[in-house]
Amino acid sequence: MVNLFTGVESTELFGGEVPPAVQRLVDEARGMAPERAGAALWTAVLTFPNCLPPYYLLYKFHASRGELEPANEVARKGLAVAAAQASIDRDWRAVQPADADFSMPGPARFWLFTLKALAFISVRRDEREEARQLVEKLRVLDPADRLGFGVVEGLLTQSGSR
Image 1 (tube, one colour):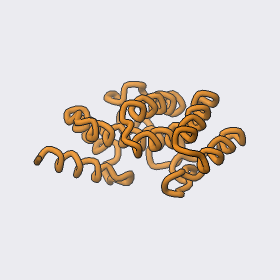
Image 2 (cartoon, rainbow, N blue to C red):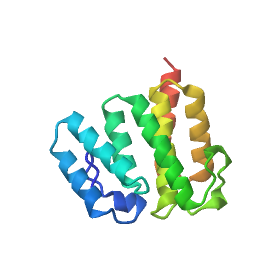
Image 3 (spheres, helix red, strand yellow):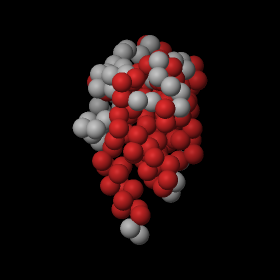
């Protein structure tokens, strides 16, 4: 499944195949007006709640449009589904580096990537303390910064200097 915005294969990030019906909804969303594209992506998430890539596409869709409340809602739902699939604690604050292999494509990597998205969304919502806590957790779980939390950390620092 290709990201609607970047063209990057989500399977490279998260692993696994998506059901053909999900792929059809995503393909349809690419050619639609934004309102209809959002509805198609919501349909994919609600119809296939255990399929992770549509959560990613939907929270990216909302965040790119400045719709931070629905982006936050979708990211948190995706985080919960990924936590269950990766057999890690539902509370992100309790997750430790040894709980999963966050470097391999799959639910744990999706979970970590979504944690980064929540940090970004928190910065944009001016929820500085939440963003700071998320970045600190990302630093613990991804000390080599393979998923790029440093970008969010930079935004957090920049937003604090205004």
